[in-house]
Image (tube, rainbow, N blue to C red; front, side, top):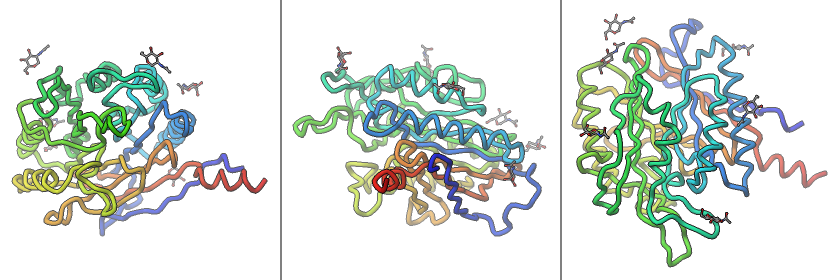
Length: 333
Ligand SMILES: *[C@@H]1O[C@H](CO)[C@@H](O)[C@H](O)[C@H]1NC(C)=O
Ligand SMILES: *[C@@H]1O[C@H](CO)[C@@H](O)[C@H](O)[C@H]1NC(C)=O
Ligand SMILES: *[C@@H]1O[C@H](CO)[C@@H](O)[C@H](O)[C@H]1NC(C)=O
Ligand SMILES: *[C@@H]1O[C@H](CO)[C@@H](O)[C@H](O)[C@H]1NC(C)=O
Ligand SMILES: *[C@@H]1O[C@H](CO)[C@@H](O)[C@H](O)[C@H]1NC(C)=O
Ligand SMILES: *[C@@H]1O[C@H](CO)[C@@H](O)[C@H](O)[C@H]1NC(C)=O
């Protein structure tokens, strides 16, 4: 009984003029986040498959005009090759093109008895999604690793850009993930969960600056896609789990330098919750929307945008089978 998808659809209407019945003026894209394949505690694989089925159902309805799926990080739980292969196989079942964005869990390979010497998850990510990331519609994807002086390692920053609909929509996928090792003295494996700027040649901050310069020449709605949201909830220390104040403000400063650009804002994941807020105090129109975790809530968001202007007019949350609901059902029987 509880197997069927509970379609909880609260709609954020972002445009006063709102969507008319002329659906051909609009297209949609889906957001998935925090799949965590390899997390055996959660039914990560089952929920990922179920999310794929749900998205394919949406895509089968031509009036949805679903054109892309963006996955905002943590596709794997501990970046193991088998996890990358599994998640790719599951996502390859999507009937619309999908674009993966790397998260902190995808950075450093480990299992219960072993851990890799260096954070080479980015290279494995690049290898796994090589076919997608080298498609002709992917712009400015780096061709390999650069020296990362922040963490003294080679890093392949998984940054890229996609333009849709005659350049009316610009999507910028960003890799801010820390490559710093988590506190080993506390028994942690893998990398720190937070973000770094990488303000050096080939690093994410400089790469973003270059994209913004290029986008000044064309009118479009700019959407950033990344794992960690710029602003963490007040009860979570951003410095450790996301950006921290000084990094967040430096990004705000960079974005604000390009006064002619039309930003929608950022779509992120990471904190395993739905959130709709603002990333920066002095950019009130720049939104920060977070999608809940696929592995927990089987969450999917569906975003509707205007084909001609790229303007985002609607975000719908779609919950899957809620684990708490399922648990309560089981307890009662
Ligand atoms: C297809 O999508 C449209 C627009 O969202 C909706 O009105 C319609 O009911 C859907 N059709 C089916 C068969 O689900
Ligand atoms: C892909 O879809 C097919 C058909 O629904 C299914 O049999 C297969 O198990 C799916 N593969 C994965 C990896 O989910
Ligand atoms: C962990 O990975 C190492 C290296 O690949 C392997 O030798 C070991 O068997 C793995 N341990 C478990 C529990 O899977
Ligand atoms: C990658 O690109 C850089 C500059 O864009 C170039 O110097 C380098 O040779 C390229 N590397 C490979 C392996 O193609
Ligand atoms: C694409 O955009 C350009 C201006 O940015 C416009 O002149 C052209 O008509 C558009 N083409 C289509 C097919 O909409
Ligand atoms: C989109 O913009 C790029 C430059 O960023 C340009 O090379 C390309 O031709 C444009 N595409 C369309 C369909 O206008």
